[in-house]
Amino acid sequence: DSGVTQTPKHLITATGQRVTLRCSPRSGDLSVYWYQQSLDQGLQFLIHYYNGEERAKGNILERFSAQQFPDLHSELNLSSLELGDSALYFCASSNMVGLGEKLFFGSGTQLSVL
Amino acid sequence: GENVEQHPSTLSVQEGDSAVIKCTYSDSASNYFPWYKQELGKGPQLIIDIRSNVGEKKDQRIAVTLNKTAKHFSLHITETQPEDSAVYFCAFKPEGSSNTGKLIFGQGTTLQVKP
View (cartoon, each protein chain N blue to C red):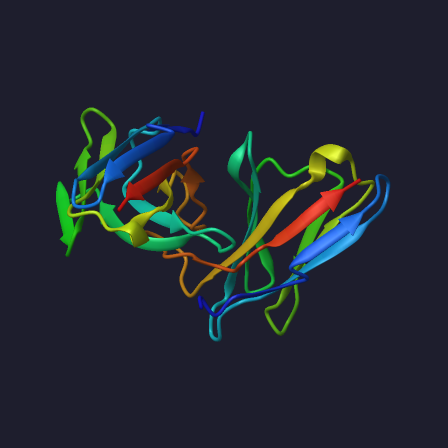
């Protein structure tokens, strides 16, 4: 168990809908990362938050947004969902920023858009 | 661009044999190279990492080697066991990432260890 909690584990929704994925980092970790894993794209970096502040953005769609709250949990919001958004979404946390930062991943949220 | 090529995509070995997975990265200024193992239904888990100031690092049956000149790094698993069966990902931390720990991942290698 990595100590990173993601909810829900599975999410089934329809095209055009909006969903929210939640992540609780390990106790004491200030950084939260979101990754998308699909069969054809592998593990793609979406966004990084450190202590509530956005630090880096990857190829995150404009329909997607994220935030990190004062209690350090994070939410990833996906809107106007398309079939191609179906994927496994991972959250990872770490307790430092810089060289050699070790990321601890949660078990993921499997999103199915029908 | 920021990318890393990982080979092979699948690897099948007999229990007790060695397994080698290789990666080539794009960013010559990168200096941190971790390897993650992902078991079915779980998130990736860090198994070993190496920084650019060393050429090799070992942890029991697992070793990683780094050739910065060629921009290659490899994962070596010796005396493989059935529980080593999983998907393995290489990754690197791109240049200009001093204020973020974002990693760029390879496409993954599915390792099957046959009893």
